[in-house]
Length: 419
Image (cartoon, rainbow, N blue to C red; front, side, top):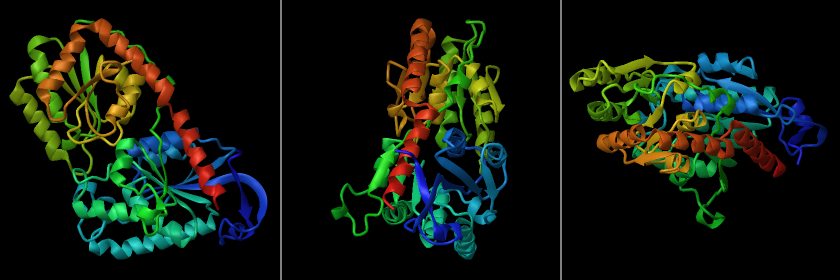
């Protein structure tokens, strides 16, 4: 089916609903909303999706709550607007959200004002569908979409679980997930299960989010297929990701110390930077490196824009999260670049890594098991190379951004066909 929608007369005038009379078929106007412009995992996934969407079917309009790297990256590829959101709302971390609401009480009026600005934006720009990309955007954009009488799609990229969020926030978000969005996309089956959405209308008083689907994030495979020529005697093992406690850089360093005893020439690379006030943790990592006596073989590479090039310089990619990862975007990037993966067995990661085939899965919070897996690969480079080959093929078969974009376009078609 051609993914188009006929514009209603009222919408062309800046108001009205999608059920109005048709005038002419044209690409649907989808407003993507994210509260931040920091290039974190969900924002990188958004950027890749927007780049790949078929412009004959979808006209993307981006709204961000702040200026930043994401806004700079999006402007050349799509219409991008920055509607600044309160710093108090933007800076509130997911793990420290208050129990009385998703936002601090002093920010409530600021949120209400922001919602109304979005309603006006939606009407003025003839938006057909709102696609939200973060937890804060889900709530703010969801309310604005309902007030503007437009369908809302929540793209949930976080596991809604008590190990990840405060208990009352988990309960509230699950409730709102049943009442606000018309459709829910989850980035993994693990994420979808944490939403605890009802399987049938009988399980919910107002089951608005009965339509749900898993769409795994995709990567741009061609950009990551870069060979790296190095001395085999000095293997490079790296971890890529934002520096924060649950990403497990401390576990990676502890495992590096064990590997170093058997492979003293191995080099270990921590790629990423601390966001959201987690500088103390980064400082603790440097101290841990000194305590373990491995400062000569550990490199803290900091934030790198050229993640594909950074991954290409590695021989083994390690993922060390200490709680269930919603998906594991950097893992598919590593697999796409022919890298064998050692990853913690939780969240959405087992949906990506086939244990023993494309990588090795280890328990979370287990530095010894991680070190053992790394040494298995170092001891058998032929097996490691074959894992890299299989991993790349798995990404080509299941985790390209082209696959992701086509599935998302099908969701748009489903939502708007029901109007």
